[in-house]
Figure (cartoon, rainbow, N blue to C red):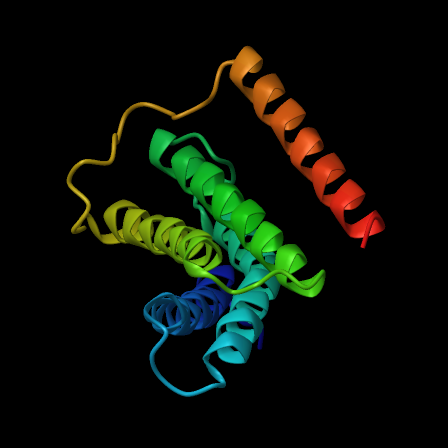
Length: 171
């Protein structure tokens, strides 16, 4: 007996959201400088776990769609937000890997990544059950950057990576 794509999507989504939520709480504790010393490790390991589960949630979600494709603007927005969240999460983890301090800004980026992923989950509730707490999310428009904005973000990312590489090389 095979497990349906919808069931797999629920499993991977719960895993992803649970890990991101745990990470968000730990990043909040990091920002407030409160809680146990393990808060930094919990924040980053939970973020990594959620990041690993994210592609499985996306793939199983696309396979669970009755029409077989992303033809709904809400679903396209879910993919864009989850990719933005994943990109921020990767940046937070890479910064920590290369010895970055877990200061308020670092914890803030971690919490923004978590917020984007939780927004994505809320949009899934809107699509599947017609209920959500996210009333301000556009439901008929896809939030896509123009090409010039995407190119500008790529250039900014390259400058930041280059600056970080030069700083680490001089130490």
